Length: 147
Image 1 (cartoon, helix red, strand yellow):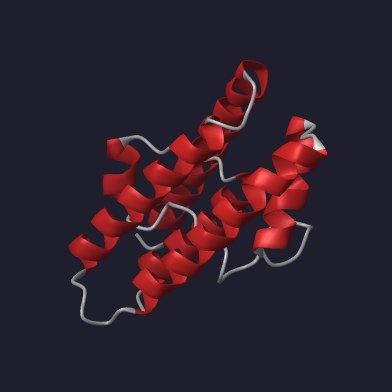
Image 2: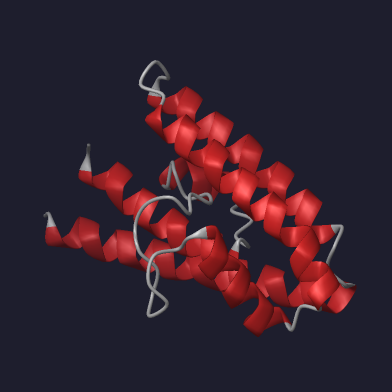
């Protein structure tokens, strides 16, 4: 597995933790798997970004109600399962894998936004943007290390 892809998967697990990353098309071009992946990699101090950890983090950061948690849980679990399937599908070319992950990611964001309040959506968007900036910084630092 290439280092770039592995880095993107680890980042995507963290992003998934915030599930919350709505990467721009430019960011996706530079970070092929910078979507949610929850099934691999590890998160920050919360441990692996399992669907349970992602929901816990979202609950804490966005102050989710019990009803919202119950509605988000199957979305997060399904997304994680589908991301793993896409990742494990060796018949897909990298560009096809990236496109499928992007499509799944965007679909999940839409589903989740339908459950969040406007205030939560705004905070979630800020969280995603912050993570994308951190990812770009990490990526540019990594490229400098290889020069």
